[in-house]
Length: 191
Ligand code: FE2
Picture (cartoon, rainbow, N blue to C red):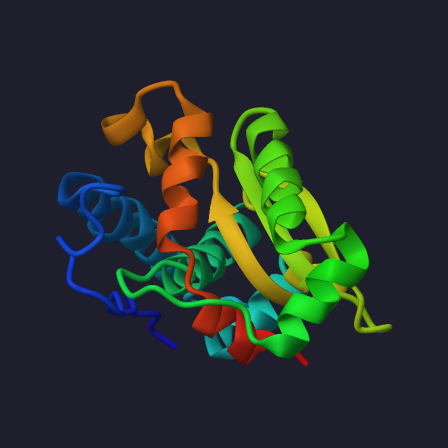
């Protein structure tokens, strides 16, 4: 099947001043699109041709895995951003308090994990089988989807996510990320 670039769920200029239109033009229309174009070139004539994106991620390796996982990771990441303010619901708040003590402490620890992720990668909030939540970091295209974790939130810490707006300051990008975090999406993902 032919994979297609999902539309952003917000206007491309609506995340300013935290994430600029220019960043999103590169991040969504160029980087995300390129992963899609690459995957569409790699899968014809292979067993992956008829698989869903999730099935590819669970079975492929090498360039097919990398491009498929980056498509999924970016779609999820863009859904984690919103110009509309939202907050964790009671269940999510309770889970954050159980694992981290408070929402503020969670934000501190998630930011620290994102900032400390070496090189290109992702920070994630995931929910395990016991329904407890934890923060994890992955490198390059790696995604907690392969470990069957229920994914609640992610922040892309590849330099292309922030270099136009924040140059080398990943901490400033993380501060901006929290201004845009889509808690409605987290609430919806929580089991
Ligand atoms: Fe990215």
